[in-house]
Length: 127
Image (cartoon, rainbow, N blue to C red):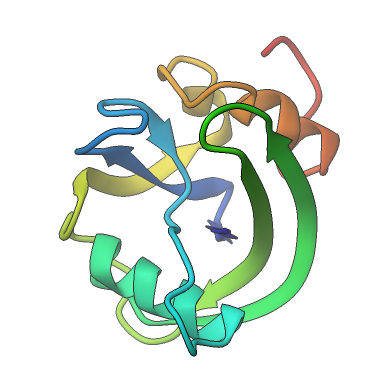
């Protein structure tokens, strides 16, 4: 699951510090732990990776990555509550606000740009 957080034409993104996808850019997120509600897990993951507190909103999109392991990704809208200056932490090597234009120049996780465009998070264009 991931948190889609947009502020002033920029998307909150993290550069992964570990596999899978080490050194690739994506939105903050992670796994649900046993006994955890999805919204609570997502808020925890965002806090662990960016040191930001968020309020999780509606489901924006679902993606599936078939392989070993098989991932089902749920991305939710979220908003920052309080301090909005990210600080990379946990398994994130970097965390920052990235303008929509700059997203296109980063090395992102597979199909990230296409998904964000399909879900109208990023403007349509070349991905």
